[in-house]
Image (cartoon, rainbow, N blue to C red):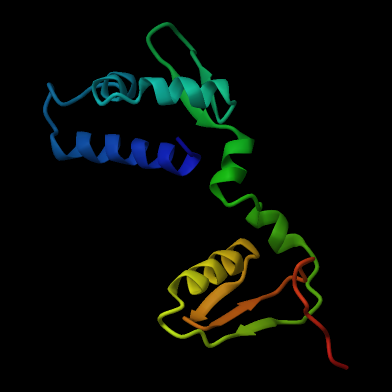
Length: 141
C-alpha cells in the first residue's frame, strides 16, 4: 500500500465515522483497519519504514508517514525544495500530434512527460521548467 493509499484509508475511516455519529460507530483506527482487513498492509508499511508508530500510552497508537513515504507520495520530489531551487528562466514546451489510433504510444508519451514533471496544458501541449537528462532541450540565444 503506497503512502497515497494510506492517506486514502485514513480519510475513508474519518469520513465513515463522521457519516455514522453514534456511540457504536465510534471506534479506533486500528479496530476499523482490522475490521476492513488493513492490518497486514499497515504492518508491511511499518516494516518498509513508510509509517512510523508511537505508543504514548498502552491505549493509544499514533501512526505517521515517514519522510521517505511523504516523498514517495509526492512523486519523489519535495515541493518545498523545488520551489527553493533556482530557475534558469527557460520554459520547455513539448508539442506533438499523434493520431487517435496510436493510443498506446500516446499513453506512453503522457506517462513519460508526467515522470519528467511536465505539466499538461492540452492533450498535446505540455510545459516544464527543468532541464532533464533525457530531454533534447536547447536554449536559443
